[in-house]
Length: 96
Image (cartoon, rainbow, N blue to C red):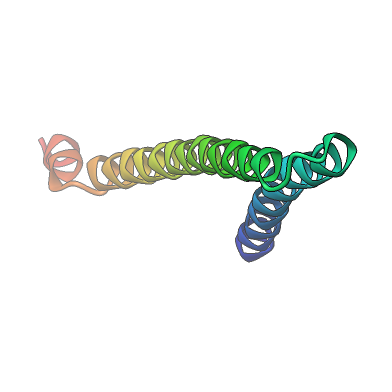
């Protein structure tokens, strides 16, 4: 199940990058054709797209890292609880 989740996140990230760049670039191309200002609005659109893509990737990666950190902390807490339950201190109390 986790592998599917990772694949879904990777595909979502790819779409975010592609659309974040292509949409402003397309708008820039359209505006350049309409106002005969090539290549300036296309370049502005490309820069806006790259910045938007970078921000979106950083947001998604931050969320992924937070989720992984929470999962790691939960596993660590479970292991501690298992170790406390299996410790010899319980056996000493029973024999006394």
